Image 1 (cartoon, chains in turn orange, blue):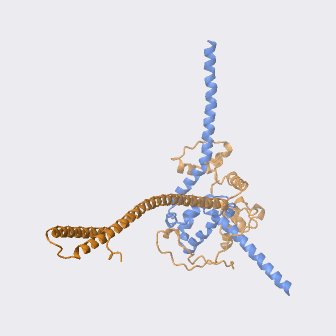
Image 2 (cartoon, one colour; image 1 turned 30 degrees about the vertical axis):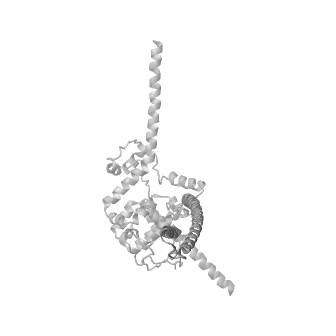
Amino acid sequence: MAAAEKSTKERLMSVLDDLEVLSRELIEMLALSRSQKMPQPGEDTQILELLVQRDKEFQELMEVAQQQGKVHQEMQLLEKEVEKRDSDIQQLQKQLKEAEHILATAVYQAKEKLKSIERARKGSISSEEIIKYAHRISASNAVCAPLNWVPGMCQALCISHWVLVKVHVQLHSLLSYLKGDPRRPYPTDLEMRSGMLGHMANLSTNGVNGHLPGDALAAGRLPDVLTPHYPWQSSDVSVGMLPPHHGNDFGLEPPGHNKENEDDVEAMSTDSSSSSSDSD
Amino acid sequence: MESGIETCVLVGVLRWHEQARNRFQLELEFVQCLANPNYLNFLAQRGILRDRSFINYLKYLLYWKEPEYAKFLKYPHCLHMLELLQYEHFRKELVNAQCAKFIDEQQLLHWQHYSRKRMRLQQALAEQTQAQPQTAPPHGNAAAK
């Protein structure tokens, strides 16, 4: 509809053109009427009427144009306002985005902190227990060599190219110097054989000739009193402690993959056998 | 009749408990034996480290790393050995006696680390105290002159 209507400018121009034409005709007629006497009596009034009509139209159109101009000005003002508001909104949007980003980071870091607090609390052990345990493993020389520990001759030969051995030989320790201090950071043969495992093994292979007191006990030649009791068995400490459940058969593949296959993309086939069934 | 069933159940539970306790003791001893590199070499040479069920058993033994179980270990080196034993490469290497000897030497050296450090500190302290009385007399002589 708007396309069919002519714009105010065009209408004004057309009216102006009409006015021009009409006034020219009128003037021509007036000029002619001077020389000739009234060729067409009604025409000049017609043209006058048309002229007046056109003039009225023209005035109306001018009014319309004025109003349109005002409206256009208002529109421009409003547009400016709109632009300003737009930029305000965009600014706010940017600030909100920044704030959201900062908050998200803060929340994430807080969550991480909470996670690590949880982990720390889960793994917390009383300091008294730690000190007790530290004392137990240090006093028994399991993690720190005794101050007077001397390696034997063969041991000294093995490690002499790394360590300069200071020799303090006393008469009563001459033998121990030659043999070396038998203490080690791991259970020795003697200790291993005198434990539960050693007894079980000796029971199955009865009659094995052993040179150690543990073996002699297993073969039934020594009384119980002489069994060397090594504190690594800690039977008194571990009263009430039970191992975790496991299925009887270790032959089947446990669920999950072994460490050497960590590079493989596919997990190994899981015939999961580990149920919480009791042994026997 | 019911008390009979109850006693049976009780006896069963007690027996199970005792068996579990024995198993605990055995596993405690065995896992600590793993700290001995010579024993590991012994196991490797008999092909025990290649057995699938033994490898699974070693994985099962990792429960000794938990604090409530680890506090019973007297020889904590065994935990490190247990971790290394999870890798096939390490198990293969242990067949060599030289490998076991090297591990033994390194273990002993590490074991002696703190005592040696302490000895060095004591020596340093002794040297310091020796040096101080020696510096005092020359001043005394100079003053006398």
